[in-house]
Length: 304
Image (cartoon, rainbow, N blue to C red; front, side, top):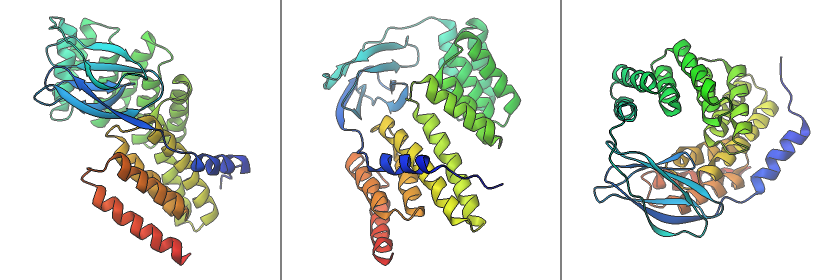
């Protein structure tokens, strides 16, 4: 049965499309070498051999900065809107077995999922309320295709913190990977509500689902619904881009956003997205490709 989107939803998409992107600034985090840096729980990468990482972030609003390095206790502090330049974060050595097991699990998460699962479970056994370890376990089990076990890990995480946005976002990803669209949408929307509107992972997840629905409608020849869903996808992806600011994950989301506008034949909006990408990520390895997207979009705009 074809699903129709109310006019006000489409109007919302168009209004949101006209809004500007977040203003940004550049800061440098100084800590231990190879330390991982998160800002508002968004991973910005790792420090270099000198212990430094330069990050582009939204220039407004207070933020939470977290830094973690193997063998050290994680440190966190508030980042004020007025802070700029170099920000030093001192880390102290840790002997906490749960934390060390968790760090080992994180290092194995991509290269050896079986070992990662083992170490996440060890961390949780040592500290049952270790939420990061529970969610790391859920993500790794999902990536390995063990959906049922991943959902059990999400359920355990929710016991200790019932209304946590990241938990619901992880749940949404699990359902998306297993093809359970209705459950995925509900989980992503719950994550956004729990994050009081801030949850770029969930916004990106919703955008991806709406893009798939748009593609399905296009394949059926229902071009009206195709455009409506591309606009719904664009609305979610633009929120994600604004919340990610200059984080590395934004590189892909910008391109999905621009493509969604192109597919909806809103070429001016697509060009604005691509040009913003080049301003935020001028040295990206994908800059040349994005420049070609602009040329293509301008050509299509002139033809239509």
